[in-house]
Amino acid sequence: MMTDILAIGAHPDDVELGAGGTVLRHIQLGKKVVIVDLTAGELGTRGNAQLREQEAAASARILGVEERVNLGLKDGFFENDEPSLLELVKVIRHYRPLIVLANAVNDRHPDHGNGASFASRACFLAGLRKIETEYFGSAQEPHRPNAVYHYIQDRFIHPDLVIDITDFYDKKMEAILAFSSQFYKDGEDKEPGTPISGEDYLRFLEGRAREMGRIIGSIFGEGYTTERAPGINSFSDLL
Image (cartoon, rainbow, N blue to C red):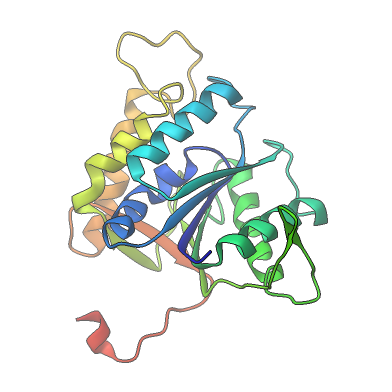
């Protein structure tokens, strides 16, 4: 099947946090979007793998994505090795995305940077004809996405491009808060605190979105870094 965007995250909620508004914008435009979580986030301080799976499904319904897939790699320990990479290669070849969104290339959580290089490498390998794969018993054809863009997460990285998400910010936050085990709940929180569980983190998310939006003269935005410069036919494409 052909997919417009394959959004990849090392953990459930990575895509929502870094690219939720972008996903919503493109779905409104009629594009097909699929989310791939590399792990179940089972090492997270709060919640557990089963609960996060339920939260991920609820968030996917809010976003309206076509499908959400979990590769089941080991949280904190997945590597850029052949067996793991081939699992993502199979998914890329199955969904045949035009664009892949992936984790930040450098971030506080080491899984994010690892996920960035993992996704980029899998996209390249998926296009090699001499790598033969099967998906649910059917032989697959090679496929390499047109581009990989890395969303910006906890650590600030100057963006190469910014998507205006002003009309989608509230819905993005609704999708994020579907992961109720991970984020601030006024007066109800009995689990250990984490860098993202405090009320201040929700204010940080708004501040980051405003910061990115300001770069392009909008209210809210999501920033991305690129592996290669986007090409345009003329400056008219930017007017």
